[in-house]
Length: 225
Image (cartoon, rainbow, N blue to C red; front, side, top):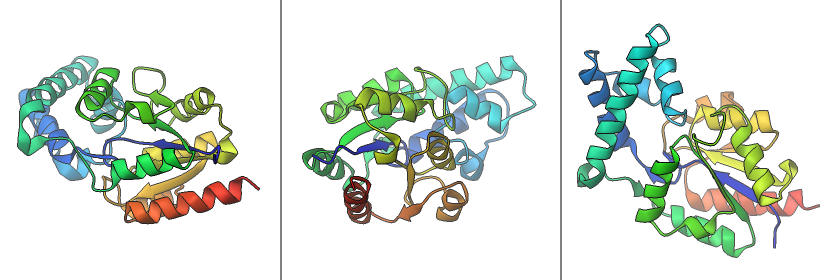
C-alpha cells in the first residue's frame, strides 16, 4: 500500500468533453443573443464552476444575463447527452491508469467543476465510482482554484498533503494544488497549454498516461521516505 493520494480532475483529464462543452457554450451564447466565445476563450474557464466560468468570461454582465447563460448551457448540455458526435468519452488509458493506481494501493479522489448531477451521470455511464475514496464537485463548496476540493479529498481519504498529487489539465487545477500545498501534475491533452500550466505552478506536465503513472510511482516511493 502506498498511502498516497491522487486527486484527478475530470473534463480534459480523464474524459474528453471538448465537443460537448464547446457546443453547449455556443448554444448558450446564441440563445442570449451574444457572439460565440469560441474555443480559445472557452478553454480558459473549463474546470470552474459554471456560474464562475460565465462571470470570468463576461465580468461586466448583469446577474440576470449570467443566469441566462447558465440556463442555456445546461439546456444544451443535457440535450446533447444522446448525441454521439458530442459524447463524453474517456481518454485512451485513463481508466486503466485509475485501475492500476488503485491496485497499487493509491487512494483516489475526484475534484471537478461538474455538478453532482453531472458527476452521477458520468458514473452511470462508466462503472468507476468504486475506485474513488472521495468525489468532490462544484456543489460541495468553493470552486477551483480555492483549495477546498483538495482539502476535502485529503480529509475524506485520510491522507496528508505531503503525500498527495493533483492531476489536471487546467491552470485552475495547478493553482488549486499550490493553494492546498500538494504536488501539481499537468496533462497536455486537455484544455490548457503546457506552458500555461507550468506558469500556474505545475511541477511537471505529461503527454500520456504511461509517463504520468511512472511519475506517480516515483512520487509514491520518494514521499514515503
